[in-house]
Amino acid sequence: MKILAISCSPRSNGNTVTILKEVLRGAQEQKAKVELFSIAGKTIQPCDGCWACANTGKCHIADDMQELYEKIVEADGIIFGTPIYFWGMTGQAKTVIDRTIALNQPGRNLTNKVAGMVTVCGSLGLVDSLKDFSYFFIQRRMLPANQISAYVTGNPEELKNMVQCMNAARRLGQQMTALVKMNFKYPEEFIERHGAYGTNRK
Image (cartoon, rainbow, N blue to C red; front, side, top):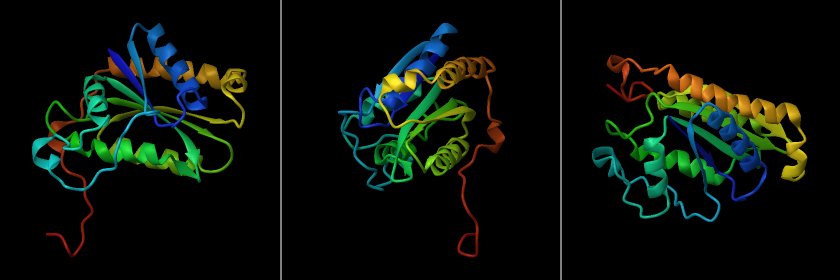
């Protein structure tokens, strides 16, 4: 199995990456193939709403998201990580979420993949980020694993001394592999486009 961690922090070696590496270590202990993809230094443009991908399953924007698409498709489990900026996930995290709209074809979607999340915060904003990621997982018909949240304002060395947090991160990696092994399949007869209904829709 393959477990992919996506760091949506603009820092390549910050606290978010530190926790994600520990999650991957737990998965690797269970014989999973692991990979960390950091958006730091990458060019990932916002979705432009062209809707071309609705029919093709391909995004026309030629940037580093194209590489990430392939890693997402190949992964059995995906751990998203973000620091909290202005009481919510980073703009980069939201951009990655938005761009996954292109993954909507059979064999190229997020359905049945195991999903976990890591958030790092100095003060407020954890709840909103967790809420948004949780709904994203549900809407894309993924199997949610646990989440790890850390309140830390110092550098990664300080974070590494938070023994309970690091242990929980490693256990999340182990949980991800256990959930993948369950081979969960969303009932195909209930896979349909999610939407809201009102008088403006028939």
